[in-house]
Length: 103
Figure 1 (cartoon, one colour):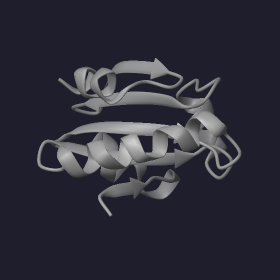
Figure 2 (figure 1 turned 135 degrees about the horizontal axis):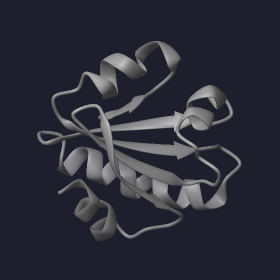
Figure 3 (figure 1 turned 180 degrees about the horizontal axis):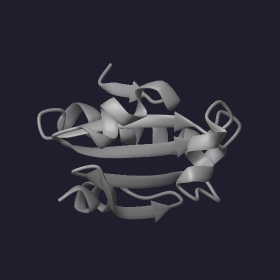
């Protein structure tokens, strides 16, 4: 699978030092809208794997990362370029809206 699960130990390497644009999906297993978005995120990961790195952070397992990036509600999608946050959206999005954030 092309989606990378992030945690404290691999965040720096996978996101901050990434040469590719990174999309992070902050989610939780109990979140209905997050589960609805999962196939969309997987499709983007597959379709754009050459240009974009797609990652997920389970906020229940990685609360410190959720706090660090001020994730108050989920799903939250954050785009990083060159180690910096470039865009953010919250809630259910259609695929085109997320792909647009990545451009």
